[in-house]
Each structure stands twice: as C-alpha cells, then as structure tokens.
Length: 195
Image 1 (cartoon, rainbow, N blue to C red):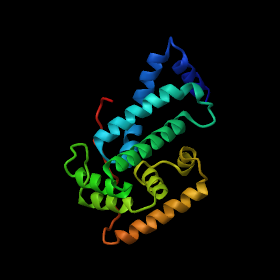
Image 2 (tube, rainbow, N blue to C red):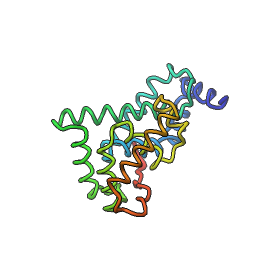
Image 3 (cartoon, rainbow, N blue to C red):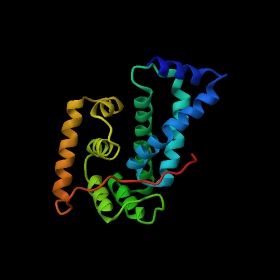
Image 4 (tube, one colour):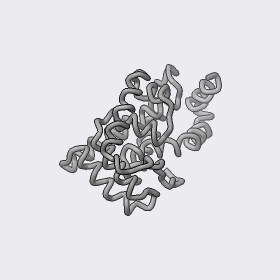
C-alpha cells in the first residue's frame, strides 16, 4: 500500500506525472479494455470508453482518498463510464439497453477483435436478458475471474449480495442454455495496442 501511495504522489507531481501516467497506462490498459469490452461489447465503443476512463482518472486523481485500492477505484470509473455510455447510446438510438446490446452482439461475428464462436454469441444473448447488476457480477466473476472481494469494492456492495447475484445469474443462464454442455469457455478478445 505504501508503494501505491508513492505511485499516486508521482502521478500528482508535475515533475514525475508523465512517466507515472505512462506506467499507469501500461499496467491498466489491457485489464480495463477487457472489463469495458465485456460491458459494451463493441471494440470501437470500448476504445472511446477506455479513453474517457483514463481522462476521468487523470482529472479526479487528486480527489482519490485511498479508501480503496487504485485498481478498484479505476474499475469503478470504467464501469460507470461504460454503463453511462450504453444508456446514452441506447437513448440516442431510440432502443432499450437490451435491444442495443442484442444488436451489438449480432455484429460481433464480423468484429476482427472478437475470437468467439456461435456458443459464445448465444451466451452473450442470454446474458443480456439478465438484470444489469447480475450481468455485471457474472461478467466480472466468470470472464474476468475477479474475486468477490474485488467486485464488492468496485461495485460498492457486500460479498454476500454479490454471491447471491452470481448464483441467480448462473442459474438463469444454465436454464436458458441447458443444451450447451460443457459450459461455455472464456470469452476472448484480441487486444489492440493503442488507446
């Protein structure tokens, strides 16, 4: 934790912030890309949200109180940015969030950054039918393999509530996808290097 405090000081110090911010990008670009991509699904949209996330992180770093890990704080910003983006995009398109996500899933087949198959497309379509919180918890636990404690810190909720949400999500998905056995392999996105 001392290292993290020192790193935050380097990010805030005008003399060291360029180097520190490059390190922040290098450490968090890939995991945040995957996290955002799991929520918004589209590569180009993920690119936009990722850029907005790093801008927000840079703008609000001086307000970071260290009550959570830097990782959790950044993931919370990324999650909020991704959900806000989806809601705004749905509103502009005149669609519900679910309809927008279903349409995006249909376009995944032609996405060069998507390494999935038909079964993963079916899984994504099933996930979209879950309530928003269950979607988030399922994606963070199943695809990103985050621990319940990490998800709880990111989403600001209890571990017990998360376990219940994940259990309900898995139960619903198993019911919807009972013909797919064994359960779907992890979703994979080819990562790109630039922001």
